[in-house]
Image (cartoon, rainbow, N blue to C red):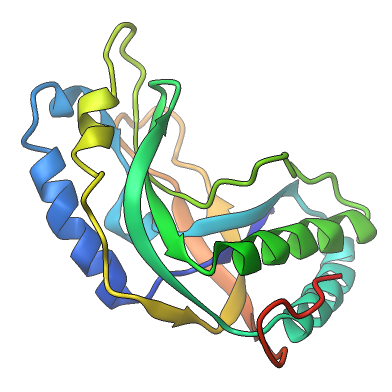
Length: 196
């Protein structure tokens, strides 16, 4: 199964963002983008790819330990950007150093369980909003329309292991479906708790 570790924003934060997305979808060329579904909003911490059932117990154990080392932290959905006119995303604001440490720990948990992770330098917490497959279509106006967005802060209290179900091949317009496998509480005791 395809798995990743993530922070899941509360429904209220996703609903606030939905109002801004509605405005984005009224911009010229919005219909040429493939918009992510409302239920797919997550901040990916570490992507594990295909994970064999035999590896799951160790991955669960290592992620539980990782979560236990990190304290809850403040976050909100704010701003946005684009990855080279291919992906439009909403960003994050708040205790981003804590989130980066959590992402590093989630990647390390996967590696120690024998998985290859996609850890990249310069982790950018983001929620994917839309994908662009139209050559020459700039996402700059969409990203600019996110500049002033700032949602209500909330406290991140857990890490989720999420399963990605790809869309059925051959069905146009279908989106991946995401299923939360399990969650672990962040149980550290203050900012900057050790992450590994």
